[in-house]
Every structure is written in structure tokens, then in C-alpha cells.
Length: 115
Image (cartoon, one colour):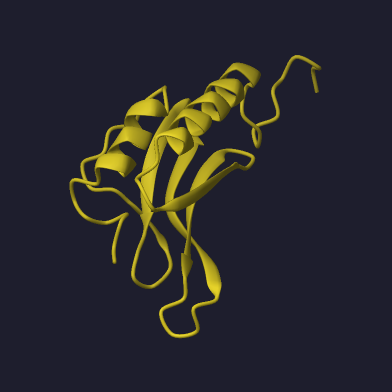
């Protein structure tokens, strides 16, 4: 195996740095009163909301959005009612994560910011 072949389970360096920058920008401009965190995993960017549990008032962290890097494009997913990641209907596949993070913030379909 050639040393120049990229590992298929990690992001290219430029894409990783771009994703980290986009995530930091997204978290800076979060909605008022909503605590968000985000993590970059091998080929995915996960956005999580920290909120009090409705019954116990203990803090819980819920994943609300996932951007997955596949075939040189980011794809946007939301957490379905059964806990599975589902592709956002009609969402584009993009080379940059910013527009997809903006779609999470705007939440035109009401699938990310459920109360």
C-alpha cells in the first residue's frame, strides 16, 4: 500500500480544519438559552443539545444533528423518533459544512429544535 493513499475512515486535513472552524462558528452563534456542544468524529460532525430531563431535571445531552462526510460531500441527518439518524429530506450534498449547519440553526422543517 502506498504511503500517499489516504485512510478512508478519516477526513482529509483541509476538510477537518474547515469542519472544526465551521463548528466553532456555529456554536458561537447558537440560539439564546440553548446549550450546544459539537464533536468531530472520524467522518462525522455531531451537534448535541444539553438540556434538563423533563422528569428528573438532571442534565441530559441529546444528539440533534449529524453531518456525515461521504464521497467528498457533507450530508445532513436528524435524529428520528426511534433514535436512528435519518437524512434530511431534500437536503443538498455539499463540499462545505457551513450551509448545512445554517440549515440546522434555521430548522425550516422543525426537526432539530423539537420541544
